[in-house]
Length: 394
Ligand code: PMP
Image (tube, rainbow, N blue to C red; front, top):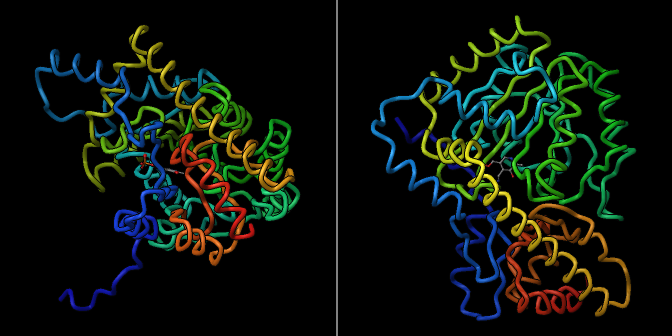
């Protein structure tokens, strides 16, 4: 029967990783896959994660199933981390999910159950998985303008004009911080304008927050999410713990559904449990337990926040150094956007041909849309990359 299957397009980033591995040049630079790497190119286990795992190993006396929505203590800890009391706790339904991707998938399914004809407004560009899951579920996608090819910042006027076409029953998908793949983000007054559009159109926001703590700080990166959640009656939030806790493979995420009032919360909560049951029954627990242990222990939390700050600072330094080196070599400020962008990624804003030239001639590997993982750089590779960018005429 399976001969009827059609082969699916290969994941571009995974294909790129393989090409990188096969490249013999010792000056090659991997700016592809979106994981944090330290100066030695490793993705370390964070100190607090190790300590929490040790505690769990010592104290855990059963691995019996948790609840369908995971351990409620994980929801509590994450709701506090993301929302910090921005909305009444008794309006928030939540379910643990396999990673942020699981939260995004369950959110889309929840929308589809509630409104089969909902349109989902997504930024152009957005994380490709948003599009592929929406397509797989057969949901209608509407692109809104987001990236300005000239300034490499946000095309704010275009964004607002496009979002204004949404109406009640539609969903507007927003990246809470550290936009993937561009690195370009809204400032506080621009977020306020988005909130105004949400209120005027009645569209429901869905916020994907996968990099809290990677941009301007833990509270700063959640500020827009908190403000939106407080300003509209209903809101979905898909949070990932993969990056900020460095527990990628543990598959740890949370979907939050904020209701207009506590009575409506119950229906959301029951539906989230139902959706988990249909897709995988119980969500993974190990990563969730690590996160809960860290967030509920003052010393571990402090240490985690410190290490996360170091990670954030490292990426910011790399950004300013690369922008500085490019300014020196080009004699112009046209790469200043690299220091303005936030999070792990920056879209260089060049053609797939130039990206290919960077790879072939200089062993620089980035996604064909010119997304670079800034964390893939270090002191040695920054000058190499800067020279390569100038050499190919970007
Ligand atoms: N949303 C966005 C925008 C992301 O970039 C990612 C990670 N690549 C995720 C969600 C989810 O990641 P994960 O499933 O690994 O937690």
